[in-house]
Image 1: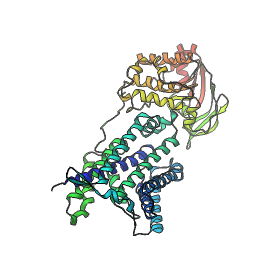
Image 2 (image 1 turned 180 degrees about the vertical axis):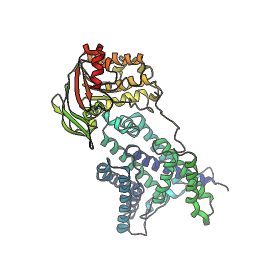
Image 3 (image 1 turned 90 degrees about the horizontal axis):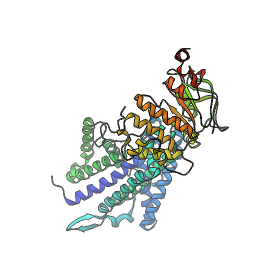
Image 4 (image 1 turned 135 degrees about the vertical axis):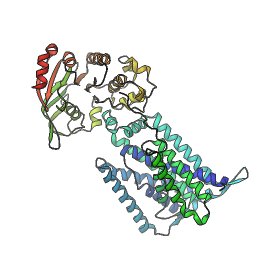
Length: 297
Length: 230
């Protein structure tokens, strides 16, 4: 099995996008202890925004803006209508609620846009190759690695250097004590949902550039793989979740490139078998520190 | 500001943890709350913080009702809690723990004021809080509460699990905090030391106030024992 430079660049790019999605899912899990299964549908909605802007003949920057507006509006709506009222209920209730939102959004997409899909042709130029030292690499591969790195660095700055970030980290460690200290629950959760939405919008633009055919199940497979990656890395902290997302995206890209075309349907089988194996050996996740922060008495 | 609890009732399902408790803590006062396990001491503190179900009665800060307010709003109104078991954020640095205390602060100011009271905290400010000893963590928990510049300080068993020398450090700090004009409500298991320090101490049993003790009663062992087993 040989891996070409194109495959490697592609795997890095997929790793970067999955890392963004993983940290988006992980941030909300941190403060709400909720896995948002509707995350993929947020990305799907964003992808449709890009596709329709393209159909209407809007320039690509306007399509990207529309994508951000749609995804952020839906995120805030989800927080206000579902997360906030259900926050004090059991995790099972919230989990089922996010399943319901996911199916609802998907069904709305089928009814409104049809099964066949829409092409986001405005993102076409990003699929052209760049010549990097004699190797042809898709522009989107390089752009997505750079954008992912910038987003993750900004997020790290936000979490470690601002008081909002500090409040978010504290809330994800011990929400009750954080509130006793005056940390506003609604603001922290709203902030996490908003950042998670921003990351979903960025991911939607990148994924649309990689695959311009937008259908009602756009982003669904990616989200399922990312969820496995988040669990693989460790769900409760942003950095392990990010690394888990990157790892599974990278592995998925390499495997996808290495497998012969007639065997590519086995890709998820290999991925999930690897996830199960890792979790059997390290149930807390690949990148979680064992016994981190244990209290001394 | 004066904290007044009037006829407080706390109920968890069928269990009534606090039954009609009334007490008042004025600025510059330490009021002790002692009693056996399950007497309702922690439930009282949690109810004041809006973190336990209040079934009846009133909680007022300078006359304004706090009942039914969100925990974070109670903190922002000027009441700080040093919770049982310290509840410091082990994975954050000492300084980050202190900065969290600023969330409830209404007056301008930073975290530096507390180092005078707890110099050991300043020494370790860049270290992970989980790496501190139990006594240092307790000092950090009190310092974090003080960073909010509260009018009322609630403490839930601050001496639990500490060496006698550190217990003295904590109790001396409480006396200094009283001098600054804070109203302090201290829940403790160390009855004798609490009675000796506090302006008055209430003995709680089965969710009800059984007895009020003054500093003079601290050396009357028989009275203390009788208060616990009444």
